[in-house]
Length: 260
Image (cartoon, rainbow, N blue to C red; front, side, top):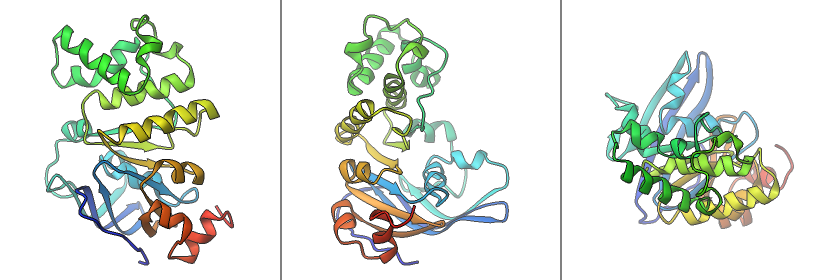
């Protein structure tokens, strides 16, 4: 594999070593070595079908729900190799939050959406749930827009508001890391800008890994960028280096629009 990495003393939240993944006979991820570092935004870029979303869904083992999946290698999270041995999936997904391509609120109230996770994890105090909801909604800059209608259906929110609500739901359990799978692809430019501003603010509290097809977005919001192609990690580097002086010609061809 021709991957180039820059290492610093930053703490690693995840460290993936020689990870391979198959869907049946299809070798979807090949010998992946990648670290996700604390309080950074790591962008995962590459053309459709290159393994970006598959990779990000391995980090909370969501991909294991797909029939016929086989994963080998090592994936270290909190000193545990979560690809080997028993893993408490409920606890893992509490600590590794996920935000999908399109806002997917539950058909419940705004309030019940935000506190869904804390309730599952045993928080029963109404006052504590109110505090959790307010904090999460403030963190995603949604509190002022919804504070007077917390009991209203979440599905009545706009697309951009729904996506911010889903981010609030993901951070209400105080995760270590937030995974985002093309979180702005279904949004208009104004809502996209709000989410990007939010991502840059949230990295002060959380570690973020974002899959994006938008080169400009990767350049704007991320600290490091990883380029995937045909299931391989071609290159990973600081974003400013990746976009100005990529080490691999394939990276240069992709970010300059020659393919993808």
